[in-house]
View 1 (cartoon, helix red, strand yellow):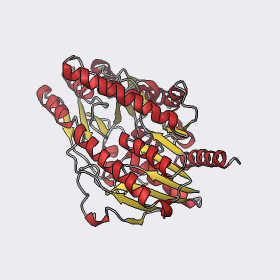
View 2 (cartoon, helix red, strand yellow; view 1 turned 60 degrees about the horizontal axis):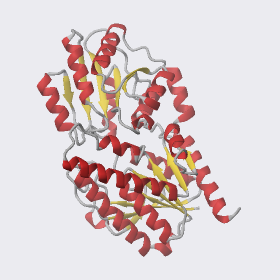
View 3 (cartoon, one colour; view 1 turned 180 degrees about the vertical axis):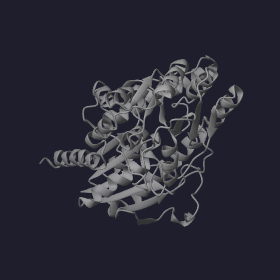
View 4 (tube, helix red, strand yellow; view 1 turned 120 degrees about the horizontal axis):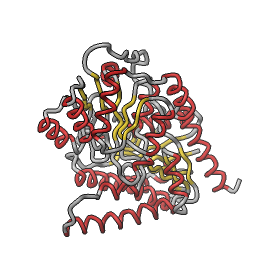
Length: 414
């Protein structure tokens, strides 16, 4: 099968989308399929061409790590703001359509896969699939368009807010149309798959995010400390959807109540400055490390007593499961979740730790206080069994390949 993948994020960048598709492409190529990837030159997370990358690669194709062919397209340098990120994605999406059309005789895809995040990539996928007369598979890594309602929410109601709300409604309608027009929609959670089926999206399959091993597979599981502070680590994006302000307030409240606690934030994002400012204003026991490479993550996992998963109480986020949760489960880390929906259910069902309501800083502080007294008591065997059954790389690739094969057979009338 000839598979064309369109993505705004791809290796050698590192991040959840990049790790997911690197593993999936590896297994698809190993199964004998021809994979072409159209993606911008590597520029995540800095927004600039990554160090050591050749600017001349834009417009050219090169072999990928797993035997795929990667076609590099333009990008627009970004600063991390929502506006600059959107403009970057629009530029890349437009060049994706142009590149796919110019190389149509080389690509000749039997299926086009467009993956979101990067909403403009979904629109590019619709255009490319139509131009090249191939079925479209649309992967929704998050609960779009539901998540737009939370992202646009606010307490103030100004004329600007009204305009923003109108734009959100327009984009939501467009995303739903794209989902319904796709030949197959891939989600990462069962709950969002159910939501889409209720919206007359007729063909949906769940391909969960998988656990991707760390560069050093011998990384030891952290041992709870008998003395010293309760060590909490957050690793990931510091954005609006994560709502890390709740964790900062919880760390402050726990410390104020006499609990010896320290929260370490590893990562960056659009809300990093405001989260830093809140921690400074409260004089909360929080330290900020900034972004680290994947091979440096292990030391922070080894350092911690509990791993924080944080999501706000937005529409759509109850159908979202952060990929880092699967990593924590596979490593046997205790999990502190400030989340609801499928994320909270997985944490409780696997015996990984506790889940408090999003935005409930007092509840999270109380839970950390209790954890400091008892120490982590997660069920590592049950956690790892769940990952092996629901979130393995080979399992994810198998589900995706079955879905693509079924789509191809339907197209051929087999």
